[in-house]
Image 1: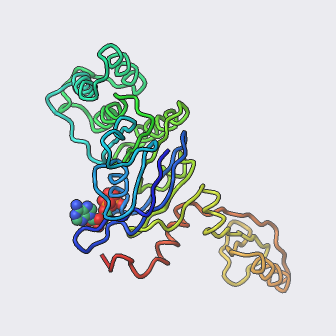
Image 2 (image 1 turned 30 degrees about the vertical axis):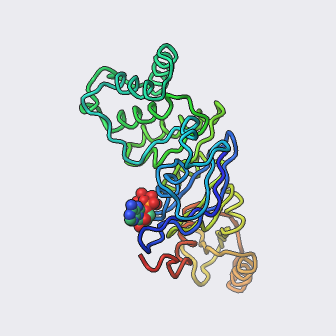
Length: 296
Ligand SMILES: Nc1ncnc2c1ncn2[C@@H]1O[C@H](COP(=O)(O)OP(=O)(O)OP(=O)(O)O)[C@@H](O)[C@H]1O
């Protein structure tokens, strides 16, 4: 549904995006995750046709990102979405439905349904007077006024309280379940891990890993083993009446077993801990030297 091939964006001689290639299937939630300045927004804007790539191509539903026709199938949620403060949620959304030539009856029915689903109170209050969470919900509703098949959301849950964050993430899942394709960015790895079917990890303008979270875990992560012993061994921490050593392969587990036996004790339990996306991300970021963009 979205095809991205060798996208690169250079500002002056600074490459904000070094070269992104990935695709997003119909009905999938795909997350781009990475720290501030990684190039997520620039990538999303190139796909949404808002920034011209220096090199490479992006298509949405088979239409080139540079072709205005593409916007018919796309809803874009910018990272910062300033709303017209003097409008109410309803008049603001009516205004955008009109811009998209959505027939009036269809628009008001869709807007009402979306606002109900987003539990948006105060629909007739000035947007300048509503909370940040409500503003974000209105911006999300705006991305849906033309009933697009593809949604590109830049940091949809950033800066929201935990309740509203969960609400937004749950809503993204519902969009997918209704057959929409969602591409979104986040710097919070938990948001991505909890809702995305597939993920690209971006760092310093580059995609450094891509796949499902289990695939990324298999390829880049290291399972940790927590080995509990009945006696103290070198490097162990005391936990209650047991001692625990954390190691990252089976040979090291055997080594702990031998050392415990030599000290007159034994291994009493072994637990594994899968790495989180955050653990993997931190490892990849630590390995990603030098900066391919020249140390920005
Ligand atoms: N219009 C521009 N002119 C010059 N540099 C830019 C421009 N837009 C982005 N950049 C630079 O490109 C890099 C990537 O920016 P981008 O906004 O894509 O990152 P991001 O991953 O979305 O970060 P954040 O999470 O902070 O939004 C940054 O170093 C940024 O300063």
